[in-house]
Image (tube, rainbow, N blue to C red; front, side, top):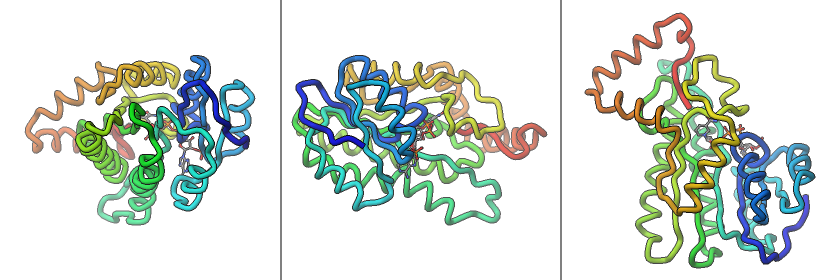
Length: 260
Ligand SMILES: NC(=O)c1ccc[n+]([C@@H]2O[C@H](COP(=O)([O-])OP(=O)(O)OC[C@H]3O[C@@H](n4cnc5c(N)ncnc54)[C@H](OP(=O)(O)O)[C@@H]3O)[C@@H](O)[C@H]2O)c1
């Protein structure tokens, strides 16, 4: 992995850049002449990404390894203008009656606790005018079956983004919360249920980058899906619970229902 050196180009740091949405974001920003610090764990995939553009340097660390986060931040010679905290994972609670506490902990650790440490590491270093982008999910718009861990982590992340935005408003650090619908990535390739309005990672990256450039707080897409989720969420919860249970009983959904 190469060492990042000072550059006159604007700099964006992206976690979870070795695949899916993060990789597409890294390529998008590199093509737009940003210096990109692409972070992930898989060194082979990071090396492949680095070879695609002279604007990309990479860093390999596990976001749940607190010491590694601090070491990376201390060794970084460039302070990013934009940080996109995108690394995340999804695991489903298949049997709520035998709730898997370890699974719950793993998901919360990656999708929420690690974000807290990354924010603690980087916020004091950011210059006024910088941007911090948290990648959540449209799962927070509606309680979805089997998404106890993933949905809880992303709902907490949304609250974190909102409160940070309030508290950093007069410190000139802009916060964005990204809430994507379904995007075709290794994360969703595991899903065995229909994923309406599925986007490519490149489409997702374009929408995210457009929202970030306008310094939007809420970057939510695709609208067709999010309005549908909002519509169901406007129903009394007892109605939605009944509908969800019916969906679970369908043969093709017996092991899974919608979650993104
Ligand atoms: N795909 C969707 O439909 C969708 C919808 C809504 C929200 N999202 C969110 O978008 C983000 C990116 O997801 P994706 O779909 O692009 O998934 P993905 O292709 O599976 O990519 C996940 C990325 O996160 C990294 N990562 C995971 N655990 C990590 C850890 N412990 N330490 C360091 N890096 C770690 C992975 O790195 P390595 O592979 O190198 O380990 C990988 O680069 C996630 O936060 C996800 O929740 C996705």
